[in-house]
Length: 380
Image 1 (cartoon, rainbow, N blue to C red):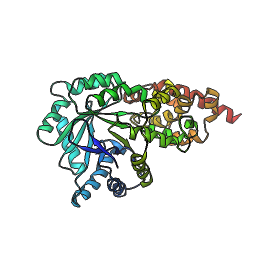
Image 2: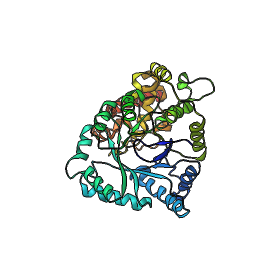
Image 3: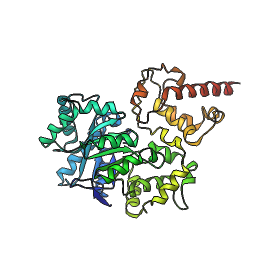
Image 4: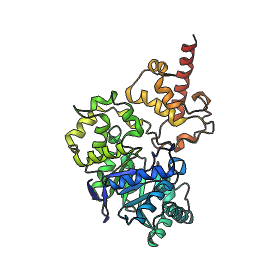
């Protein structure tokens, strides 16, 4: 495993980080904790989570692993968790949130605490107001409960730059991958140039890249899959400090560690070639984060948006999408839903949570028309 300094801090972190959003929820917490310990044994020392990840189980899973690791004298790892400014909207709530995470994680301090999920400048301003979240985090830092205050962003690169220029944080976590990197790359470059830690999440675009190996083969060279290319892009980029990967098994950990050890970094020429091959629509794909999973009608919105990626990523026609309805890809994405796209009541809650700022309601309307026509075609 390779290691690097996290920005201007004194912490040497692994270039591969463990993302706590993708645990296999069909398994128990103890079994998932074994995967965390395996990652540590492979040299991964940065573990990222949040209170709501994996139906609220992620911090507990990591806590099981951390307690066992600490008991064995293994304390050379770094913990990252988060709190939303819309939830922890006062200093007191922020302090309580930090203490609750510490209790669940079973650690004496949180090394990197994120102001979580800033999607627009209003979220940042809410966190920074007097008596707000940032003030509470400063008090936690003074008390030794956290080491570094950082933030996670789902904004364009220029807004990330604007926040960093306020000089309130030690680093930033952003969604960066080979499909959308141009949307945020100026923010990455600015952060790296000015000594901030840069953590990249969603390197595989929420599973969209492994699911479309064949379609994305135009990006690859001989002997490398699209998934390997995507991991290599993030893991070996000198501008990126840590690449967070959501692991579901030991094989995926081994593959990421191999790429960290053996992968060839992209040159500026390589990046220019990538940009020329990718369409502008790639910054408008669903990453599968699941934050929109709050539909009062119980529509499986994350599944539907991943299904819509078929059109967004590969410019499929409406006719092709209609034919896809009730096909394998459609059911793989939407089978857990209790309602159809046409049941949307346009309340807008999903769009308010979307980290990619997608027009979910409009997309559901399109999908509803595909479903209707697809059903009619089948019943004729």
